[in-house]
Amino acid sequence: MAAVGEGMIEALSDDLDTPWKDAVEHHFPEFLAFYFPAAHAGIDWTRGHRFLDQELAQVVKDAALGKRVLDKLVAVHRLDGSEDWVYVHIEIQGGHDTHFARRMFTYNYRLFDRYDRPIASLAVLADDSASWRPGNFGFSLFGCRHWLEYPLVKLIDFADRLDALLEDANPFAIVTAAHLLTR
Image (cartoon, rainbow, N blue to C red; front, side, top):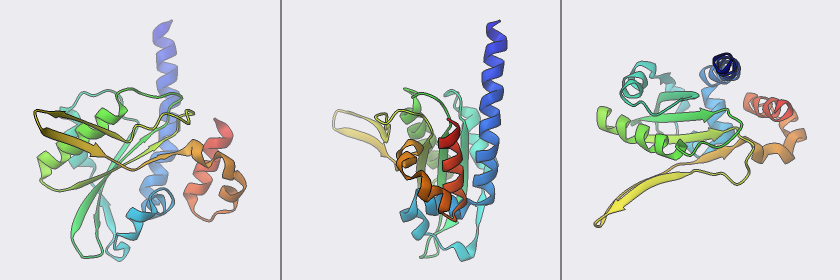
C-alpha cells in the first residue's frame, strides 16, 4: 500500500511541475521580471536566451542529492554583452526540505566547476511556511570560508496581494494567484 501512496504523491508532484515548467520555458523573461526584477533589469533581452538542459543534466546526474522539482539552467547576456548562466530552482511542495540550501550550494559549485563560469542561483519556493527561508548555505574551516547566498522568493508572501495578482498582466502573477487559490 505504501508504494501506491508514494506513486500517487509523485504523480501529483509531476502534475504540479508541468505547468510551472511550461510557464518558465515559454515566459522566462516574464518569470525573472516578476520574481527577480533586479536580475531581469541586468539582462539584454534583445539578444534572447537559451535553455541549457543538457549542461544541467550533466551536473545533476553526477549529484544524487534527492528530488529536484523543477530546475532550469539558462544562458543570458548581460547589458555589457557578456554571457552568464542563471540556475533556477523551483520547489512546489507542502513543507520545508532541510537539504534545500545544500542542494542550491552544490549545484551552483558543480556548475561553476564543470563549466568555469559564474552562475546566478535563484530560488522560488511554494511551501506554506512563512518562516522557512533557506537563502544560504556554506561552511568555514581554519579561516577558509565557502558560502552561497541566493535570492529567494516565497509564493506565500504574495497571499495578501491576491487582487493585485489577478489584475497584473505578467503571466507569473496569474500562476502565483492560481497556486495560492488552490493550495
